[in-house]
Image 1 (tube, rainbow, N blue to C red):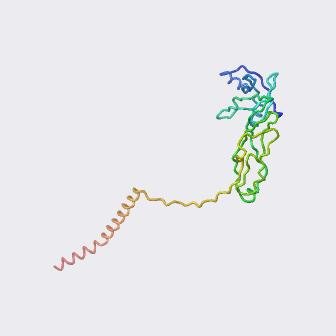
Image 2 (cartoon, rainbow, N blue to C red):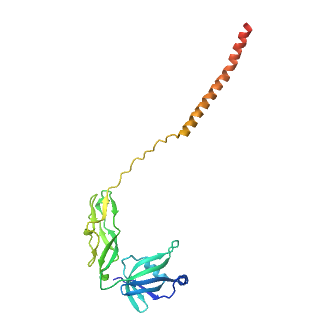
Amino acid sequence: MSDIKLQAKTRSAVGRGLFALRSSGKIPAVLYGPGVDATPIELEAKKTVQVLNSLTGSTLVRLNVEKKSYSVLLRDVQRDSISRTILHADFYAVPTDREIRVRVPLQITGESAAVRDFGGTLVHTLSDLEVECLPKNLVSEITVDIEPLREIGDSIPIKDIVLPPGIRALADPEETVVTVTAQMAEEEVVVPEVAAVPGEVEVIEKGKKLEEGMEEEKAEEGQEPAAKDAKESEDHKK
């Protein structure tokens, strides 16, 4: 059982009144669960923000609402889309006498020889695991030791995870939690040849023809004096 505690009290502010409530340093929330009527509550923002930012969905919290105490799970947090400040929270009061279903985060520990010695890439296929247990057996995380991953292609299925006492996994036992794959070889980058656009070809051809025409004109201009002298000499002989 977690030793995290939060103090709250019932609230009357709803709707437009929530703006004033938040401005006064409070966070509106709701408490609900089996045998517990949905109850609007409010909490001091400063401490609540510190606690909620460190919680996972499987961390039990002792929530004191005036003279009553509840074991709760954080079910939802609404945040401002820009400032990311907490606007509202939902707390689920868990029944202490029966099993509950919850998703517990998986924490990778240890060192894999396949990664260290063979340059493999560690691939996480699951980040959390759905389990069933009594609230008293609930944990905030489940560790997965990757030391058995010694060669490329090795993997760890759910059935090989060492679960804490009193916790039962609900997913397929053969489902992979983590595996090691070979690093992809860097492919040689081939720069494709850029084909000329039809319009560009036409412009280029016109440019070539224009240049050739200019060269012919220059050549004719250079031959004009010689041709003129030859004509005058022939006329003189006549």
